[in-house]
Image (cartoon, rainbow, N blue to C red; front, top):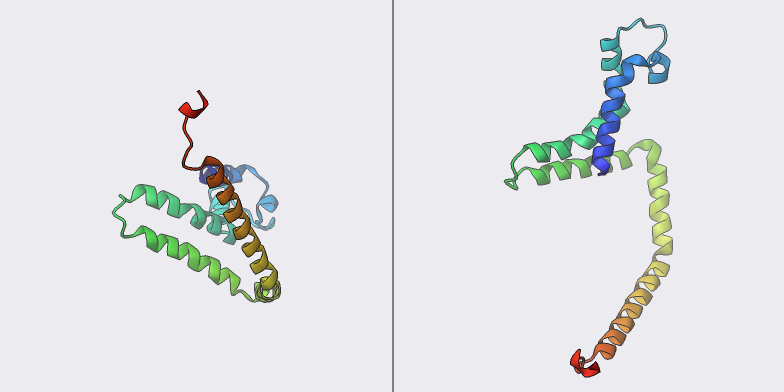
Length: 141
């Protein structure tokens, strides 16, 4: 559903960009551009290229018969893009800070996971005890 909405949004932006003002589309006002050239400039902007590559693998998976060979490569390419973004100098300090926060909060996270596991085991035991082996529909008749 999300990929459909995102695709519709992307197509609407690309197909209708020629009717917008150039300044609203990130195109310098001093350039005299026609509708086709304006659409091309808009499509070739960095964020629109990222949008295209975000939806393209979904449609490639639909187009290529599922032989199982090439699709993990597309998933790996998506993952590599994510890690390349995290290595950008602007985000490097944020990623470093996030790693430090996770390291500092690791003992509390471990305690939360252990308590959640114990509560899950407790309630699973309660369910087993309540249902027991003697449960029968005819027992209540």
